[in-house]
Length: 76
Image (cartoon, rainbow, N blue to C red; front, side, top):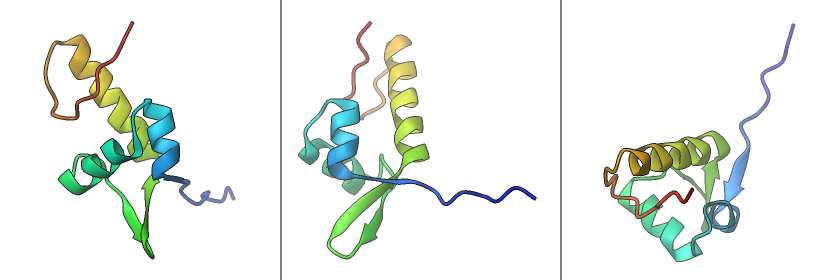
C-alpha cells in the first residue's frame, strides 16, 4: 500500500525567492489571507501546494488581465 507523504512546508524566505518578491510581501499575503500559512512558534510555514496554487492563480489572473489583489504580475 502506498504511503501518503507528509505535506512539504516552505519558509517565508523560500516562498519569497520562488515568487521573486520580498519576505515582507509574503508576510502581507499571509496576514491578508491571500496565502494560507501555518504558524510554527514565531515563524510561518506555507504548504508547498498552497504556494504553487497561489502562483498559478496569480499567473492566470494576469493572463486574463484581472487583478487578483496579490500584487503578483506574471511576466512572459
